[in-house]
Amino acid sequence: MKQILLIFSLLALSFSLKGQTDTTASADSSEVEVMMISANADSAFMQARDLAFKKEYEASRKLLNVLLLEDPDNYEVKIFRLRTFLWQKKHETAREEIGMWLAEDTNAIEVYKLRALNELYDKDYEMCIRYCDDGIKRFPKQNEYFHTQKAQALTSKNDLHEALDATNEALKHYPESNELNQLKTFLLNQLIVDGLAVGVYVDYFTKNYNPWLYGFVQYGRQTPIGAVIARLNAAERFQPNTPSFGVQGEIDVYPRITRNSYAYLNVGYSPSQIYPNFRAGAEYFTKVFNTPFEASLGIRYLDFLTNRVVMYTGSLGYYWGNNYAMFRPFVINDITGWGTTYNFLYRRFFSGKGDYFQIIFGGGVVPDERIFFLTNGLAIDDYRLDNQYLGFAYQKLASDRMYTRFELILTRQENFSVQNDYLQIITLGLTVGYRF
Image (cartoon, rainbow, N blue to C red; front, side, top):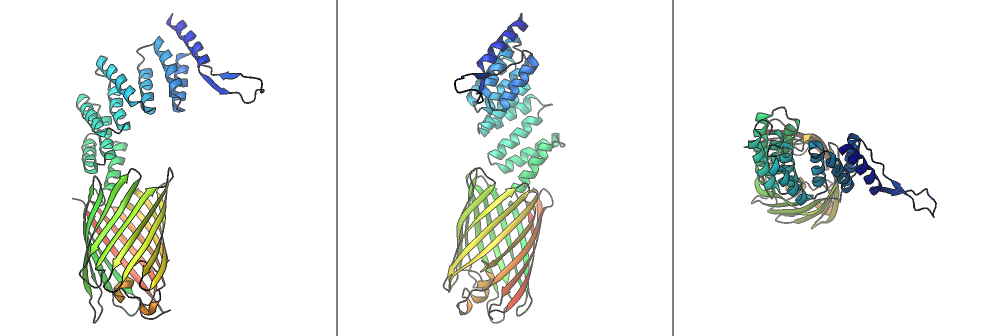
C-alpha cells in the first residue's frame, strides 16, 4: 500500500514541479514542460539531490518529503533534507529540525555534526566551538570531524593561536588527517609574523663606496585586530667625514577592516642623520569585488632635517593558483619637485605565504632611502637619479617555529655625485625568524 501511495504522490508532484516554458512553441501556445519524477525511490532521491545541487532547494525538499511519506525513518533522506536548510541559509529552521531530531535520538552523530556546521555557516563561532567540544566528549572514538570544525571555527574567528593549538591537539589523535595537516600549514603561514626575526644585509658598490651594512631586529604578533610588528633598524655606512652609524625604531600595524579588506599603518623615529628623523605611512587594501584582484591606495612620508619627502602610491595585485603578481607605482614629491617610479613583484607560493620564491624589478626614482642617506635628504644639482633593479628572494618555512629568507638584489643606479655616470650595487640579505 505504501508503494502505491508513493507512486501516486510522485506522479502528483511531477505535475506540481513545473520547468521552464518551451521557447520553441508557437506564440499562441502556453504549454509548459512538466518535470518528470521517477516512481522509483532511489531514482527520485537522485533527482532530489540534483535539484539541491542546482540550488532549487524548495523543489528538492518537496520531493524528499514525499519519499519520507513511504519511509519516515530513512536516515540518508532525512540527513540530506536537513543539509538543504544549511545550504539555503535557513539556519533557524535547521536549528529547530536539529533540536527535534536530537530530542528523539541522542546518538545521531551526523546530526551533531550538522548542528556544529550550521553554527559555523551562520558565523556563530562561539556556539560552533561549544557544540564541537560536546561532540568531542560525546563521541570519543569518532570525533575527528569535531576536532577539525573546532579548529576551523577558531580560524574563522581569527583566534589563530588557539586554532593552531586545537589543530596540534587534534593531530595527536589523527596524525594522518589531510584536512588537519593542511589547516596546520595554513595557520603556520598566517602566524609567520609571530615571534622574533633578525635580518642582516650588505650593499656592495662597484666603485666609489665601501660596503654598507644594515639590519633589523623585530618582534611581531598576530592579534585579533591584525598583525603588529615593532622593529629596530641599524645601519653602518662607512662614509669618511660624515655620520656613518644610525638606528631607527618603527612600528607596523595591519588592522583588519572587513573580511576582504585591511590597512597598513607605519610610524618611525630616528635620532640619526642617515635615517629620516620621522617617517609615517598608511595604505588601504581591498579585494576588487568578487575577483582575484586586490587593489590599494596609500601614502608615505619621510622627514629629513633638510628635506620632506611625500610618496603617493597604490597597487594592483592578482592571485591565480599558487601565484601572485603585483604592480606598484610611486609618485614622489620633495624640495626638488616631482618624480615617479614603478615596481613589479611576482611570487610563487609553495605551502602558503610563508613559503615562496619571489622576483622583483623596477625603475625610475626608486623609493629607496639609500638615495637620501648619501645626500642627507638633498638631491644633487636638482636632478633625479636614474635607477633600475632586479631582485630575487626565497623564503622557507623550515619548521613549525622557524623560517629563513635569502635575498639578492642587483641595482644599476646613477652616481650620487656624477650625472650620467652609473654604478652597480649588489645587495645580499639573510633573515631568520623564530616563533615563540
